[in-house]
Amino acid sequence: MTKQNPKQLLVSAINNGTVIDHITAGSALKIIRLLNLASHKNVVTVGLNLPSRAMKYKDLIKVEGREISPAEIDRVAILSPQASINIIKNYEVVKKFLVNLPAIIDYVVVCPNPKCITNNETMSSRFHVIKEKDGIKLKCHYCEKIFKQNDIKEYKNN
Amino acid sequence: MPEINLKGRDIISITDLDKAEILHVLKHTRALKLKQQPKLLDGLVMGSCFFEPSTRTRLSFETAMQRLGGRVVGFADPGVTSAKKGETLYDAMKIIGQYCDAIAMRHPIEGAARRASEATDKPILNGGDGANQHPTQTLLDLFSILETQKKLEGLNIALIGDLKYGRTTHSLAQALIHFNARLFFVAPDSLQMPDHICDELKAHGVKYTMHQKIEEVADKVDILYMTRIQGERFADPMEYERIKNVFVLTADMLTGAKSNMRVMHPLPRVNEITTDVDNTKHAYYFEQAENGLYVRQALLALVLGKLK
Image 1: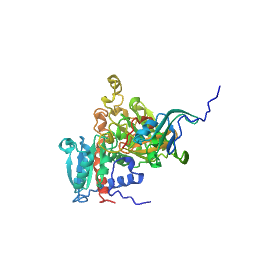
Image 2: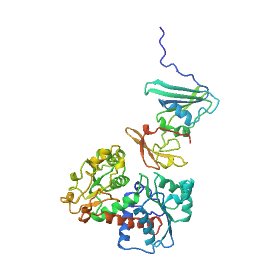
Image 3: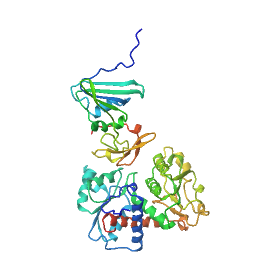
Image 4: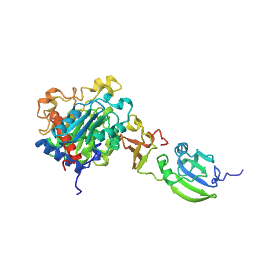
């Protein structure tokens, strides 16, 4: 019986583009939507709940023909603060960087407080990121309520 | 130390002010209480924008402006404004900012004052945004504590009643972080101080304990800060019936109180302080409400740059 190579790629390699790896399991589809990654005709490969030594389970996105900038990926950092980004040219990794969680998150997070002004007027949300030992918390710039990451149920694209 | 200058500043949240700025406001409050300046804001106009009913806050803001020689325009009912036609708060406040030199506002939506401050360069004074902030109340509370205790540092202060939803007790607890207070939280379990405030207090080394009865703390503290428990906060009416009389302060509960102890309340009170307390030396809630006038005068004069 042949043993399966543990390093075997579960999704095929790409020629040129971006691989977002080590995404928190369950977040890949949200990231695709928020960054409009599927709005072109190029190939996008998604892996959900892939086995990961460090994270147990992870998601992964491969986008053919599009180089995602650090500024773009930082916008969605709250969904996956430990994601890594690989820029691929000619099947080679030419640049590798980690997501950088900004101190302020604009637009992306919908305030869970229905009485917050951001949910009652056409305007963008703004959250201050509070980094604590036991995880990340977000403080709404407007209603000043503080939320744990899993209190956030909705994200939006501008 | 950098010079304190509040000219042009918005007063949206008590956490926007540092300790030196709070003390600066209280110093000017004291000066105005001792000596009024009836011409100080001559020629200036305050917009009084109350999208939600208010008596004390609105009338004290308006009186504050007028007693300093300024004028007031505004509304006390959003039904008379174009908010009813669907105008955004942003647009409304941008326009009102073009007419006035400063704006005092109250709005039922949380974060409305912060949003308004983005619409206009004129200073916004938040008179309450939903359950969020009411910084002028906190400043008048601090002033009243200072006035009755002759100091703010190291006091024993009990906050009583609805500590979960009550914005005044949240803001006061946050402000007391600066003054090394020992806090006592007296509330039914279901209405105790929320975790995010407790976490903030812990992070700053503020000592606090939770209690079930006013009697447990009445003899220990310098300030008993009462608030109202509203029946509609309880899913189970039986639970409300059971606790509603536990959090009522009566004169005979004050027999062992320290002589400097004062009872405060943001008002309106319903039945949580019986009227026999009014005649004790401990009652201070009516003077506290009067101090709202001087605090708002000081803030108006400071943000309009007429006091330094």
